[in-house]
Image (cartoon, rainbow, N blue to C red; front, side, top):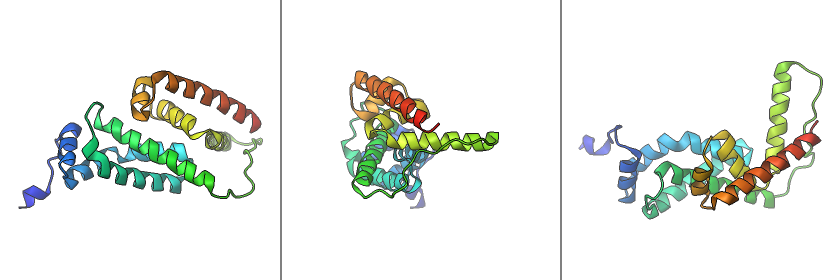
Length: 184
């Protein structure tokens, strides 16, 4: 009986996906365990907020479980999960944009300081600038720059044409440059 409650670790993602599509919660738990860190990273980068990222990840995992039976297997299950996480993060950004924003939303200013402080200051400036980008640009940049995905994979994850991916990344990078000029 116990053997039925434990999944063998050597199952591939595709084998787990097949089991998930038949309603196997243990298989889904294992898939989620394997991909949760990257899904969280995607959510964190897109939302630019730890709590919002956790909320988006939770929504993504719920949505993935609800819709895994619709997974067609045209892409790798990990790619599909990253799409679900990206969409959940974008939805969270849009939800947050409808809420009243706290005052004092100014770009961080650089000051004369040590190397560690410069690194922290630079990171804060990039996070601030990323938070100002439209969600679709932010998602494209996160998937490319932070996750290292190819344009083709980003197109699959986002379910958009590859030329749209290239355009969003280009326009997002241009906007980042302009925003980062403001923070200096």
